[in-house]
Length: 521
Image (cartoon, rainbow, N blue to C red):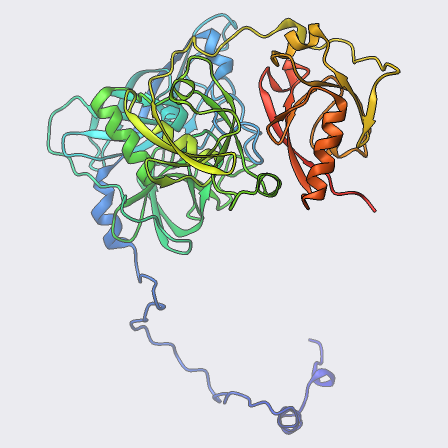
């Protein structure tokens, strides 16, 4: 045994030293006291136990078992709204290696290795929950995708066959209905108020096929934009694992605040970051699927871009709220209603629009065939435009790619080219006017220096400058004059309308690009 006396203070020495520092030592009993069991008060705002809540809601939560049959042609095209995002790019196609696209617990199936051209049978496990006494169940689309048979297991062990009422791939939601009639326990969505960051939540589901499991945590973030145009996600730190897909996350009142859909994971297990589809969105989709068997989203017929601070300064906008129209589809509802390119949509039917994603969600929630009021800012003035949205025609707006805008040699410099802001330009030729469909105006970008503000704005050689602050460009001199005038007005930014020179990079659409024109010292 080592002698620790050389490292110890005497009691009197220690007390003197502590007193000199102005500290007080807690009294130490001479003998250890036995700790007696007794009630412990819960921390302020925290439940002592989740047991009563789980007892109340768990009968409405089911395990979903799916027999799948995946056509060979679709096996490599499994749905994954999160592919390419950090933490999700390690997920392979669900079919083949047994790794899920999201957090469901799916295996290789019973099939032995088969030829690539053969269909493949597999198994998928997930979670779901009753939303009505008649037996309607909400789960994820990716749980029942390619399903041949679907059964659910209730808390009491009953196994019931289900039919798929409808699925919605863009939101990754599906509705099932048990075939056996009965009066089933159900839960409700919390649609009146969104949960706040820090609120307690409880997730219930079927992780790894283990059956009913509950985990608890808090809402760690709200309004996450992970994938797809129609969903906002609630981030929770309650452990969610594969097989929890389609299961509910509850608040402390037993209301569903979200449908568990994905996890942030590098290895497939829970890292304490899970994502659930927000309740209001899930409820609307579920009710529409029950009513129609499918989602018929309103279609406006525009391509939009977010508004950044440079747009606000260049156009003299009051805020960066809204979405700017970069293209109007020919023959679409927006064109017929009078919406134009470079309009800034700031409200729909009186609801303010925060950004382009918010606009997409608002339009997607409109009923096809309904007339709606769009507030836009055009030339600095607000206007109300009435547009009748309709169901998207899959053939409308899908014009073939112009072969003259795919690749090709870079433009060759000519002695008459003009150089300004580190870029060389010249008026479009007749062939180039046809290529870009500009109606007779525009400047061809011949070259762009890496130090040029145009390069910083994403403009490349071969692109076309069509307009600056909505004013068409015919001559290189027009470009210089417009920048000079904007500088005199105290502007540091202008907005360019840019025709993309290579369809493989950005399609055939016109892009709006902010251009910083502040002179460099």
